[in-house]
Length: 513
Ligand code: XMP
Image: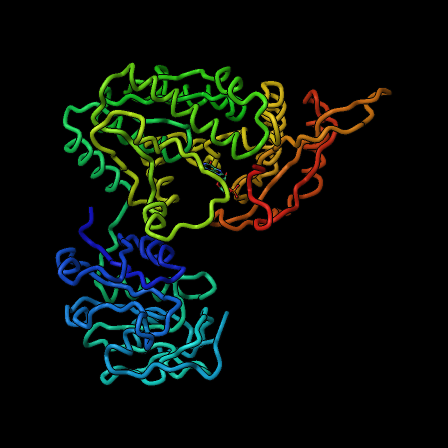
């Protein structure tokens, strides 16, 4: 499956993942590796091309990240981006200096259409710049093929050695014709055929899982989310009944979700696997009684989840493999420094301490989220599961402010169901990052019929986000919100007020707790 590989060599830029994604959009498989990847290893991996990422450093600082100059002698095409372009210039004898004026943002670049990178690009094209240093003079043997009034070498090339560099970022969408440039590099310069496809990934993964697992026993914690669902289906196709999926219904799922998961993966479903549904609602509610503080609630849910899973695993007996739904961004990000804990995330995949097993299998380790979805479709998983919006491990527990009770769970499930229904009817579901109803802990006075009410307030939230690290409040048409409000008040007992949450992230988080 990896017969055509492009290596993205990471020099600390923010867009390293994005570069890999863009290359994969050209149907060429790409992997991100640290800039310290040894030359020997690179030779062994035999990539068709290498891309140097940007990075926050100046090449002339002692401690700036550098690779060996030998990399340019391998005969492998290289594209340097931003810091990567400066590094290429610096290591090959060009001049890098502090630019008299930093360029930041959309910038018109004059490109030379004689360069293979820019053949299909307008002669004046908008590119995204973000730099304080620049290449003042290209190394000997290089030709300048892009300039701006500020930047004498916005792009350079040495086609004889298959070396290319851009000061701007072709990978970001603000570079209007960036995809054309990347495609020209991977297809025309590197000579890739562009035959990385999901069907071959699925086929190859099933084959290699079969080889790895032999007749071993496999255990998977299934949450019903897209990652664990795709992982489970891949494994069931590979080893059938050797796989047992444990689905813990903690009573904090969205309305009907437990039954939906069971319909797909249970005995009536389409897959050949052992499915165990544990209805642990009462256990969770009991443990959560009286807990108010968000972190305490998260810990209770996480720990109880592990206990339930552990009990089920013990019933199954020793397993050889535990499945985790780790995806590529987790793999890349786990290499970075530790940041402040805002919330203790609970992921149902990660249970290595409590269950006896020999090895972890991570069949999605190399895929981005959209690729996981494509693999899911390829495997015939229903669309509503494949395109399900992200749902936090602690479920509605973090969408009910304060104490969780069965009554409150029912309220938020019903309100959320109506909200999702109306969003879908209005055709807005595909455009939103995440949207849900939450239950505030606030009760207020209202009047219904001719009587006084003293009931809960439901908060509706909808955000636009690409990475879930930052998010903006979505501009849902007022008529839609009004309709949702009316339906919730009329159909959900215990609610007399509906609010729309306008907060972006930061300062808010997406979930309420
Ligand atoms: P926050 O609330 O931190 O959410 O802005 C960012 C994204 O993460 C999801 N989320 C979780 N996902 N386990 C998960 O697997 C968790 O404990 C968890 N908490 C939040 C949230 O739904 C949003 O997509």
